[in-house]
Image (cartoon, rainbow, N blue to C red; front, top):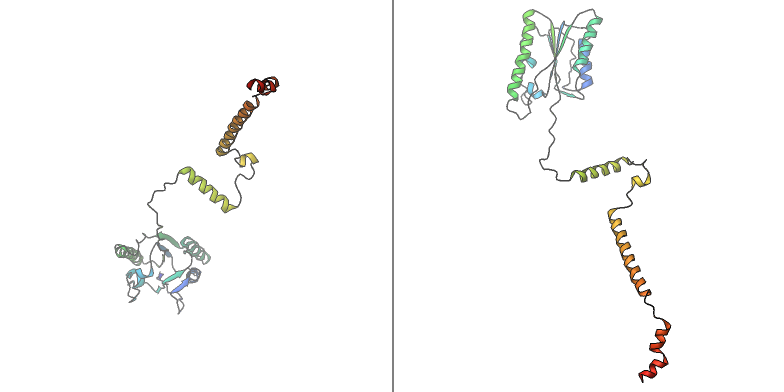
Length: 254
């Protein structure tokens, strides 16, 4: 935070604070509407190391941590903020309401700076330098016009890591994959989607395998029946049997 008004900043200012603590401190400093102009800037993917060297502590963003404007009376900074993203629009609403309570008209603007590239990108430093010049230009314009101002600079969260996406082609047939997915969902939910269907709609009783087995059994029973019927139809009359096997036939054979 840069302000042309001298604010009552606490003597001890921790460089590691929660989001709620930072917002509460900012609201406390701005409750009296100390200036007329407020510029709230959000900077996606920015980090404290982009402003100051983490080893030497030297300033890298001159317009933010070492601004040479003679009108700046207060400079407040917090290196690390833990928690949710600071809501710039909510802070804007608070400033407008606070100034309205004390009978002052404030001009509050919210702007988002260009996001910085990844930490390993060679152009990150040059882009931060361009952003620093933009902030310096804002401050210079306020100095030139003799306006009292407050600049609030917030770094948005770092860019999320990219999820790995496999380049392999899924060769699983669509129908099989759909059945597998459906089965997994039913087991996970514990309730089947066809629980209210009738019994014969829920289950397939007459499968192709069962049909083939039934057809084969019918053919086998038909063949067995035909064979037994043929054997049973072989009848020999008693007269013919007596003629061939009786005493008269035996005497004739002698």
